[in-house]
Amino acid sequence: MDRDGRATQALFRDQFPILGTSTYLVSHSMGAAPWRARAALETYWDEWAADGPEAWEKWIPRIGQIADGIGAMIGAPAGSVFLGPNVSVLQAAIASCIGFGSERNEVVFEQLQFPSLTYVWKEWERYGASVRVIPSDDGRTIPLERILSSITERTAIAVLSHAYYVSGAVADVRAIQAHCHEYGALLCVDAYQTTGVYPYDVRAWDLDMVTGGSHKWLCGGPGCGWIYVKPSLLEYFRPSVTGWFAHERPFAFDPAPMEHAHTMYRFGTGTPTIPGYAVAKPGHELIREIGIARIREHNVRLTTKLASMALERGLRVNTPLEPERRTGWIGIDFDGAEAACRDLIARRVFVDYRPGCGIRVSPHFYTSDDEIDEFFNVLNKLKPARA
Image: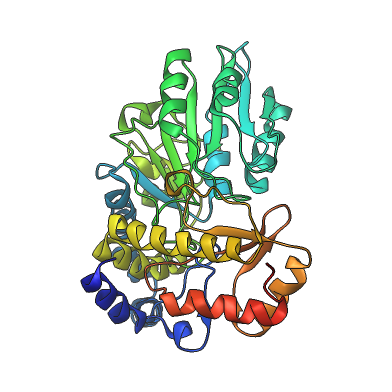
């Protein structure tokens, strides 16, 4: 951010109470809670307390509004995004739409995929899927050529990360999507690690499907996952991971068989988690107010500073040094890093640790240069700087 941007940052800092009592550098894991989220929860409670079941008349339209708000951040047209409790449920719904009875039965994902999603897709081997895992040589990156060569005419769907949770390295999903189209395979991009801090456009990139959630860079708390499906593909998906809320006429309470909604509501399941959606909306609004391009500019400057200061101290940086090759955080490792992470947190310097990566440190739009300095000041006391 420029000087005006830093003034804006200072203004927005007042909206996050935890910033007044800590050094908050863990937005890659859990975005800071805005005061507006508390107000949203109070509104939800007031409506429930005042109107009982009639509150559904207000809550149901908001699901689509919140989903479209996410869509506006990623270039998705209105009506092409829907909400769910988490990405695992939404990707299980995708898996349930795919017939694995033919020779095109492979599910391709990378070794660096977030474990929860590997659990989901590995279970589909019980229903005819053949899982193919793309290996990593260094535990942090995978060559693009290796990914492309793994997607063939036998691939039903590739489920790949936009950025790897163990290193922050960004994959070239545009090239992967083009390759999938050439071979007739679907691509589902997990953008949990990038949405809100790394700009992308689902239409400009011609992406088939994208999933993500709200509790990281979107500052929305847990309980509000989301899915985008290219409108031309929607009719292809008839999830058997379903429920009454995915029905074309949910309040008609028709018996089986299922008649899927003709909209993205077909990705609904049972009764929706309204509180999780309500509390996420204020964070989404803040991200849109600031703009992801401005957030990215500020983040690149501070992550570059983080990497430089770590290297000056002789620490290992396990995140790509080139800004275009990483998402919004830096992985810093050294002997004893896991214990140092616990000590940092005890001093209310919020970061986290991942094996093979080290201490993950992330600035967001509300992060100041002083907080980066404070992180190293505390770290120096725990681990003296090395020449």
